[in-house]
Image (tube, rainbow, N blue to C red):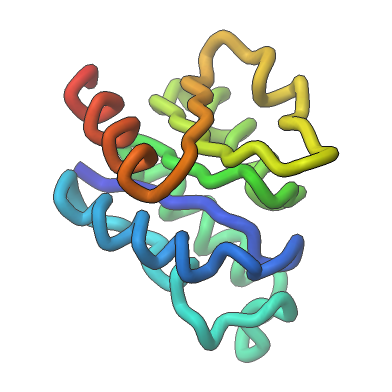
Length: 138
C-alpha cells in the first residue's frame, strides 16, 4: 500500500518530532511516499533547492499514486488542506488526526466533511491505535 502522509511545513514545524513517529509507525502498513515531512532539517521555509512548481507537481504525482492519505492537521496548513481536497476529489481514503489545542478548533471544512475520517488523539499511542483501526477498516 502507498501512503501519502501530510503535515505542516510552512504553517509551522512544532510537531515535526511527532510526524517522524507517525511516519515510522505508518511504515508498518505500507510505503510512505512523503517520509521527508518528518525530517528535522526541513524548516518552515521548505525545500529551497527546487521551485514551487516542481514541489507542487511532484507532490501531486505522489498523492495520485497513493492509496490513502493520512494527515496530521493540528497545525493549520493551506498545503495540507489542498492535499486533503485533492484526495477527496480523487476518491482516496483520508484519515485526519488532530490534537485539540487550547483556544483552537479544527476547521469545519475538515471536521464537517463526511468523506474524511477525522479522529482526535491524546498522545502517540492513541494516534497509533487510531491509525491501526483505519488500516484494518480498509
